[in-house]
Amino acid sequence: MNKSYVWEHSGWPYLTWDNKELSPLLGEVRNKQGLLTGKISLLGDDLKKKTLHNTVVSDIMASARIEGIVLDEELVVIITGQSLSKKRFHMSGTDNTSIGASRAFLDALYNYENIITEERLYFWKYAFEGKADFNDSDMGWYETDTIFDLSAIKPVERKMEYLKIPIPANTVKEMKTFLTWINTIHPTDPVIKAGAAYLRFLLIRPFERDNGRIARNIANMFLSRADNLPERFYSISAQIEHDRKQYNDILMYTQTGSTDITEWLRWFLYCLKDALTNAEEALMRVMNKSKFFDKYRMISLNERQLKTINMLWDGFDSKLSSSIWASVNNCSPDTALRDIQDLISKKNSPERTRRRPEHVLLPQ
Image (cartoon, rainbow, N blue to C red; front, side, top):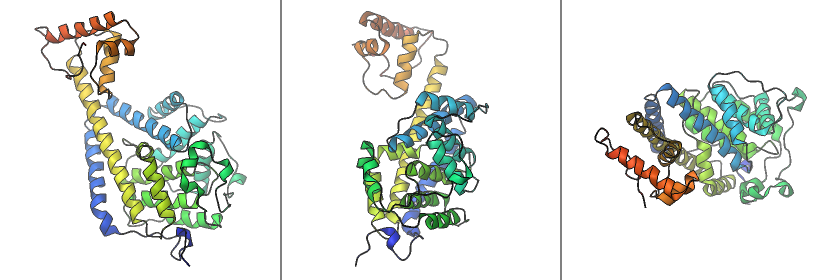
């Protein structure tokens, strides 16, 4: 009789993978991590803090959206900004999922060297639910049903087929073994352990909700250990959200396969590599944008001109016409044309011959 699920195999719960096969890809990822860290070190303090803040907010928001949860981005920006700037703020008694999501992520970010305990998992669980505190008596309770409650699945989750896969029966025992394994020091590269821990937690799915976000918190901790820094300048959650279909497919494939998770780890490493590539490209835009404004800091620009130039640097990749300018700035076409002509005149003035992005000033 063929075994259907990975946890039904005799080797479970110990997962295996082919290090030789993964080694070249892991090397590329580690190299990209080092290059990104090197480029980040070239940023000024203010720009570095802003880049870090944007990445943290992006990861928190994306991780929630993967699970079908929409957070208050403005509140996430405020809470993470206060923490990252070392300001103190009061959390106790605040019933808010956006604050809770920020608290859970920041705990994993700042305290990445700490062990992962049952208490910590419950802290994250209740934080994601928007609860500031929990009692010790709440711990030790896990989801013990052998299959996800299909009637409780939200519409966005219905596309996540892996949630319909049964889980191991003895969740308490599974979690005890998991926590022992995850806190044991292994010679395994922390990037590989990040991927393996992420998957193993999802295979157990100990809680009724938010297992995905908790799994990504765990993975983020090991990625921070790989960098040996309490900072994150790339978002694995944003990349997973972008590749959601592949994410669901590889989870389905892995859960119904053997205890060899080489394919899952290959996907995880490619996902991480793409996240690092995107972060590097975004960083280059930030650096070039900073250089651009430094070059033209003596030129007087109005609010509409600043807004549009910032939009171009932040990823607008179409040709900019006067009609688009007017729409973006909620002004008349005549005003838009005057704004553009004013920039052209400043660019062509004898004392200002510096170059600018070719798509910035295109009146049509």
